[in-house]
Amino acid sequence: MVKLVFSLILAILLLIFTSQNMHVISVRFVFGSPVEMPMILALLGAFVAGFAVSTFNHIVRVSGKKSPEDEF
Image 1: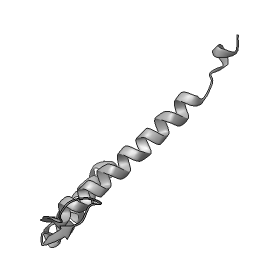
Image 2 (image 1 turned 60 degrees about the vertical axis):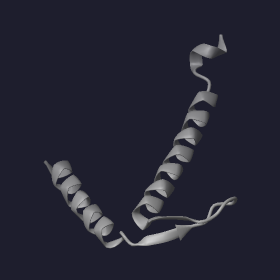
Image 3 (image 1 turned 180 degrees about the vertical axis):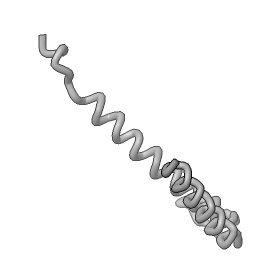
Image 4 (image 1 turned 90 degrees about the horizontal axis):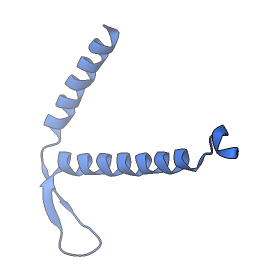
């Protein structure tokens, strides 16, 4: 029950944050012209990129560890 209430509060705060960051910004990548997009999409892209990098890092670390069965 506590997880549900916490998730609901977090979702409401996220919706408020999203509704306040809908203005259009200009994002410049390394090459090419700037791209116009809502700020929330830029934030979402940064979150997804960070999640992907951390997941890849976790997979590499876990796959590099040897289990006790591999020693024999």
